[in-house]
Image (cartoon, rainbow, N blue to C red; front, side):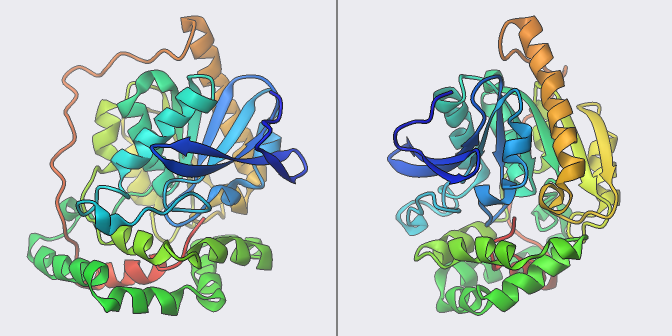
Length: 347
């Protein structure tokens, strides 16, 4: 694959470009010249740079992209207040973005790998457009512990009030400003990472810089104040492509035992791998473990796609249920704690 004229090299073997989607500029990083496509998806508040240790190693024999979701990294940040609440920065939007990116830039079909909320976005893309996804690999996928279906009903009105205050009052921006600092970023990363030596000055700067853009606060406040949307098990009921999951044994936010209960027991998940010593962002903490895992899963999906003569998909599960209705809410104390952790971008 030749370098596009609008792309610039940012690291050896890595090129940065921008793609136009629904009138917005979407930034991506690309590596690899030929072969099947692989698309990497970052988590909430992070960017394509969280895959900087993975792009080139994974590009041997394939083309690899890491995409900034709308609102994050260097992608555009449309004002969410110009649309109905929670319709701009949501999994429907991000799933559609990924599906369209695969169609427009990745040759029509790709394996998807996503970390944290990026895993949910990848699953959503596979549900929305199954022929665009050869398979989905989830790395410490967001379990959405603050979703109303995971929290007591009595707490939901309190959280709804907190969510409203974060989105609609100066409280939210003041909170974000206090936490979008180098010290806060480093503190959050040290909490999230099982391998503390991976929290470097470079990482802190890569995580902080997008959070200092003019529209970052509005994006974060819009997203963190939304308790609706799908749970991963909702999407697993509908997905028609192979799914695998890998999990850091030391993830403090999305606990291994919860992940095993949801993904390890699901007939939709073909493999569940524990990553010893890793926290919430294993692709950055232990690329020597994660890169071979992604490459092997992508190769399996590519072989299946080749046998079908294209993207293909597994047959839908009989009686698969649509997503359950989304709601709002969570325990107020838990919401405040999660908001504090999420107040700065995370890889």
